[in-house]
Length: 193
Image (cartoon, rainbow, N blue to C red; front, side):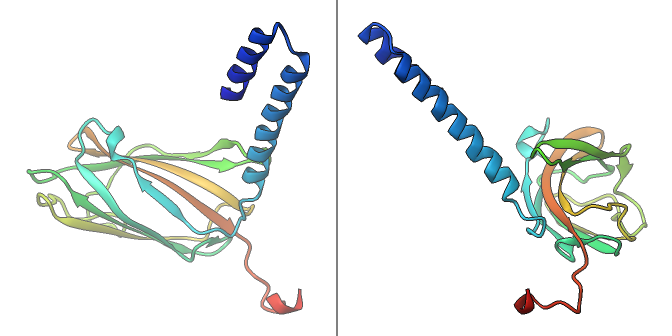
């Protein structure tokens, strides 16, 4: 866009330039092509990346400190674990912690398309994906959840957006990009390929 503004200003000063307009269009096409190449250069075997996005929350109540998957990338058709570590930023205990998340899958064009959505669920309780509540003010707390074999059938990148609600108030957020991969064939070594 800046290139276009610059070139159009130069053209106005010179009284018109068809050639410069063609150069601007070519540069725009080059930028789009570079973005597409970048989108397709992402390997399905890349590792997990995550970011706390708590600034989006109505109140910054919890902060994601750590997120991991084991294995990473997640192997299609096999169980896996997700570990999360949070810190309460609140001066009062958390009596009810609820999570709402949805996922998207990167398609062949490099765009994200919806993949999975589930209703909000409580993170307080005695199940392995929950923690005992109330959660004291300013403490760190973890979730270590074991998932059964994956329902995903194709390798590739997925994105999860997770919103956390403390006592009914939107208080935390995480954005996560993770990958599913096919199980490596034990009979094929990297050196023989």
